[in-house]
Amino acid sequence: MIRKKIFIFDLDGTLVNAYPAIVKSFNDCMRAQGYPSRAPALIRKAVGWGDRKLLEPFVPASRLPHVLACYRKRHAVDLESGARWMPYARQLLCYLKKRGVKTAIASNRPTRFTRIILRSLGAEDMFDKVLCADRLRYGKPHPMILRQVLKLLKAEKVDAVYVGDMAIDIRTGKRAGVTTVAVATGSSSFKELRRQKPDYLFSGLKALKRNLCHKS
Figure 1 (spheres, helix red, strand yellow):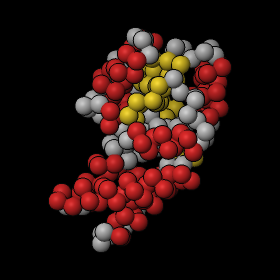
Figure 2: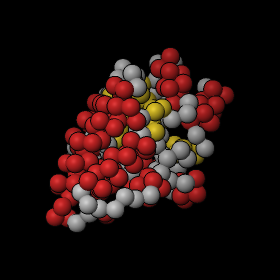
Figure 3: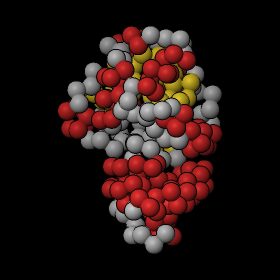
C-alpha cells in the first residue's frame, strides 16, 4: 500500500521521455565537434547524472566545456518538440492532484531544460515544487535534493515517496529516508532496479497507479 501526502518524481525516464531529444543533441554536437556519434542505447545508459556527466566519458577533459556549451545550445532547441510524457504519467499526476496529494520534481537535469520540458508539455502548474541539482551543492545520489524539497514543502520524510527509474534514484531515496518506488521505464533495467531493493518496484506508471487505485 502506498499512501503518502507527497509524491516526488525524477523527470527523465520516469515522467518524461526526452531520450530522442537527448540522442539527437548529443550526436549532432559530437559530429559538429569532430567526434564519432554513439548508439542511442549507450547514450541512454549515461542519462541521469546531469549533462556534464553525460558527455564526460566521450570527450577529453580539456574539450569538455566547449562541447558542453555546444550540447546545451542544441538541446534547448531539440527539447521544444522532442519530449513526451511517459505512458500514464499525466493520468497519474492528475489522479494525485485530484486527491490533494502534493507533487514535486527532483532531477539532476539542469533547471533551464527542465523548465523547457514542462512548458512544452503544458505541465508547469502540475507540480508544487521543482528542484534541480544545478541549484544545489550536490546532486543525486546525495540526498540533499530530496531533503530540500521536503523543507520547501514543510513536510517530514515519513510523508513522502520518491519515484524514479534508475538505481541512482533508489539510492537517493534511501539515503534521504523516504519510501522509494522504482519504475522500469528508463535507463535501469528491472533486474538492476530490483538489486537496489526499493520499497516498491513496478513495470511502469500504470501499474503504480493501479496499486494506488486499489489500495487507497
